Amino acid sequence: MSFLPILLMFALLYFVMIRPQQKRAREHRELVASVSAGDEVVTSAGIFGVVSEVEGDVVWLEVAKDLELKVVKGTVERRFTEPGPVEEFEDPIED
Image (tube, rainbow, N blue to C red; front, side, top):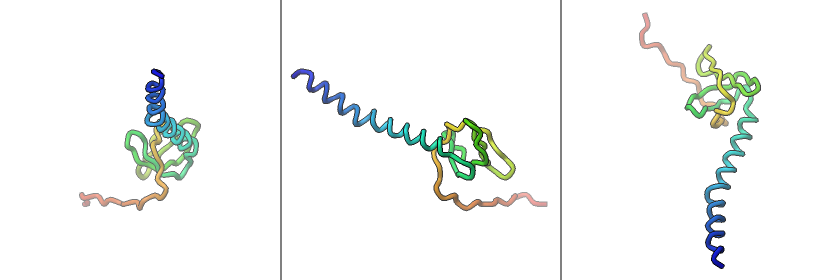
């Protein structure tokens, strides 16, 4: 009978901490596996970009016009379902 509180604490720990973390890890693995060209994503470092090419564990992100970054596929944090409008900034110094 003295083991019942310990078992209840372990069950509570499992449902409050361990199970949600496993769910997040599974969702992240599925996201990383499904990343494809054309997806707008953000990396864990906070870099926004559009996936231009996927090569195994490497993803090429287009972060600006004619500027691509090579990042590890596992750093993709999330995908945006609807790409937002691309704003074109004017150069404030025009001659």
